[in-house]
Length: 213
Image (cartoon, rainbow, N blue to C red):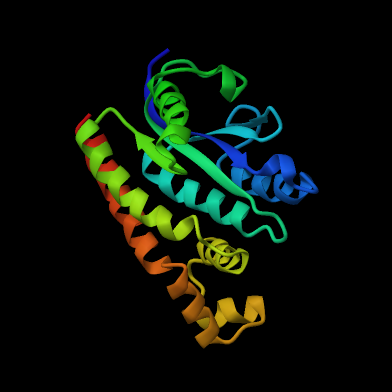
């Protein structure tokens, strides 16, 4: 089978064991995963609170991670968070279940995920390009300072903003029953514009590297 470049996100839900109702996060996260394909070929949840997701276009992988983060952090009355490792690389074998597929992207994602606890990080990337990893992981670490502190209301607004990118702040406010000024202030507190600038930079960087292959 010919190898293709892809991206894989390996993650787990933090503090899920203490959650009163697993369904509170399970149902919404499945909707996010469904954006990228069907289970179990494209995504799978296993061991109760661990998951793996293939994002077939590597430039889309950080946006996928931000969507997942916003989804989990928006769940109220639960101190949930998510830890994720993005692996970029080849896929050499595609199985019926993503957890049985393999290749460089899967290895990179798994290896990086194993180091996250030790690094005390909630999000990081490993690709075939170490210099780019160093640069992007520094930026992701800085962005994570804001994302890790999102309140449920901030995360909810980020999730809605990502789902409706064409919406104005006034239209987002109408959806949430808030004023335009309230939406503007909450986006600023969430550092939404800065995080989207990082996503755009990451996307361009990945596209440039993939063109070189």
